[in-house]
Structures are given as structure tokens and as C-alpha cells.
Image (cartoon, rainbow, N blue to C red):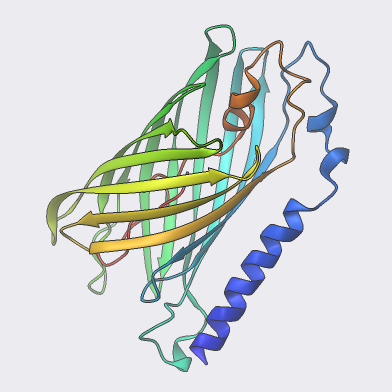
Amino acid sequence: MIMKFSLNYIKIGFFSLGFIYFLPLDSFAGDLLPSDSLYLGSSHLVKLVIPQPASSNRFEYDYIFPLHESNSERFFIDQKFFVNQQPLLGNSDSDGLINSFGQSSRIGVRSLFDAGNSFHGVSLGYDSLWNQGSYFHQFGFAVEYTKQDYQLVLTAGIPISREQFGDAPLTSVNFQISLPTFLTGLAFQPRIYLVSSDSTGSAVGGQLQLTYSFDSTTSATIASNYDPITGSSGSLTFQTLFPRRSNTATSKLINPNLLNSFAGAVGNNGSRVIRLADDPVASGN
């Protein structure tokens, strides 16, 4: 029964992503920007993370909306909601379909420099997680540095909850770099991270990701990682950002290759979804 629900869940996730991808989004205001402004409006990010069968599929939705925009700066709020399915293996029908759910809020600012060919940003916020009767919350922050050819992201999550019913929330610090490859649309994203809790101690881990962008808004990521707390794990992530903004409308102010990063969500990168000691590492941008 669990397997049946799990397969249906995956199908629904793929259908949702496909439906969003083929929507006629030309009606969104983001495609109608005058050439002398950088007022991008709101963005939406939908993500589906599929790990190994013993872990939980995760569906995420981000709503990113501006508080203030100018031709060089964007103050914004990024509100994420997520839900984790029960693992495909090791659960009974009585466990239900949902394993955990939560949210992640970030308020931040991004600023363009180098004639619109680069930007840097900082954000901070609050995250929460409900997991099988336990409730966890944490503070988080992120620092971003993005150029046309690479991106550096530093994120951290600091729990303000203690261990409950054997589940220990992990403090995490993650550093990731995104680099282009010789194949168009394919990026290499190595990550190093530190996780710790009173019950598990501290551990350093690493993750290798390959992300292929089908177009400027839709991508797939395959990831593999290892740390001494959870061992080896891997995942496949699909995500899409909309609206599909016109690259030409804002080309005088920002490099078109940076447009969706500038208007998009703050990267998860292992910190925004609270990680418990027995959870696999988060993946995806």
C-alpha cells in the first residue's frame, strides 16, 4: 500500500512540474518589463526531491516577492513550504502518507555590481519542522556571490530546539560552488558541510552534484554525498521557476544569465530544511 501511494505521489509531483512548465506564462508581468527598469515582481519555485527508497521524497514550493526594487538592488522575502512523504521502504500502512512538513522564511537583499554582470546577497530567517509529533525550529542565514561563470553560496542553520523522542536537529554550515562544464547547460556543484549535535558530535561531509538546465527556468540535479553521521546517500531533484521572464527586456541592466538567480529563491544547500540526525543531506540549488 505504501509503495502504491509513493508511486502515485511521484507521478503527481512530475505531473505538477510538467503542468507548470507548459503553462502559457507570457501573461505574467515579468515578460512585459520596460527596457529601462529592473522591477521583476514575484517568482515561484517548485521542486521535487527523490532520494533513495529508504528516505522521504520531498515536495517544495517557494514564493519570492519583493519588498523594494531598484535598478541595482532587490529587497525580498522568500517563503518556502515543504512536505516529506513517508519512505518507500520500512513503513506500514498505518504510518500514513506524510512523514513531516515545515516552512522556511528568509528576508534578504541582493545587489548588482560589475555593470550588471555580478551580484551579491545576504539573507536571514526562521525555519520550522513538524516530524511525527515532534516540533523543531531554527535560525538560518545565507551569503551569496554570483558571477556569470560561477556562484558561491554559504548557508547555515542553527537549531533552537533540543532532541525530542530520539530525533536530534543538526546544526549545519554548508559551502557550495557552482561551476560550468564543457557541456552547454551542465553545471558541476561540489559542496562541503559541517553538521553537529550534542548526541552525534560533529562531522564533516561532502556532496557532488551535477545540474542540467533544460532552459533558463527548469533543471534536474543528481547528487551523491557522504558524512560519518548518515553515511552515503544520493538523490534526484527536479525544479522549475516561473514566470519565464524575457531575457531581452532587462539586458541593459543585468546579464541575462543572472536574471533568474537574481529573482529566484535563496538556495536550500542543506540548511533551510531542518535536518535531523537520521535524515539524508538536502540536494539541489
